[in-house]
Amino acid sequence: MSSQPNQSLIDGLACLQALAMHAEPVACRALARDLDLNVMRANRLLRTLADIGLAHQDAKRRYTIGPGIHTLAAQSMFASGLLKRAIKPLRRIGSPGQLIALGVLWQNEVTYLYHGKHGCDVEDALGRITLVPATRSSVGMALLATHADDQIREMYRDQTIPGFKSITALLKELRQTRKQGYACLVYPSQQDPDHLTIAVTVGKPVTAAIAISGAALDAPVDQIVKQLKDASQIIAPPPE
Image 1 (cartoon, helix red, strand yellow):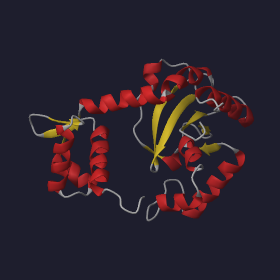
Image 2 (image 1 turned 30 degrees about the vertical axis):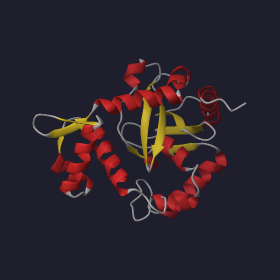
Image 3 (image 1 turned 60 degrees about the vertical axis):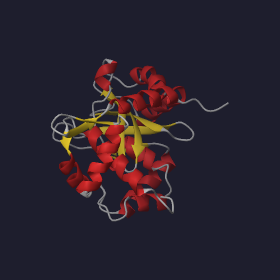
């Protein structure tokens, strides 16, 4: 955080993100309560977002995202080319029954740009999942590991850490992730007692991470990691 952050910009972006996460239109008062904002301030921010087309107010004075959001999303996808480059290599890796994912980190949460079963139709892998705690995702752990320890401490200052009892435990896991060059998590459940997920980062500098996960990965970990790293090189080849 800079020494003089623009709080109005921060609050406006928080309102915009909250709108994007609501499937249905939401009232100003409810949004203000969710974000712990003064109602008058939230109303002013939402009206400004609506004035520039990033939000839309319906006949019942509730808010939802506006066409500007889709414009920004399309422009960012075109400019980065990340998802376009990723789709073909992601569809080639893994095996039937496994999940393939591409995600990015914002603050301490992961957004999946692509998340679907091996061989599924592209449209079934796009826009399926909302924000996920970074520490509950191999993609998130791979991306967190690219940050220095002091940045991680600041990120989770005065917060609970999903899946970890303390910041010390998280930092220990992230150091192991850096050392081995990939993130590996196990999510035991009643259905899948050995659900394993492995992720590697994409790009230099890092822009995203990709993962393969499944109840029983049908290849040794080093082979899964090689698949992922090979795909990563295609998605974001090293600069010449």
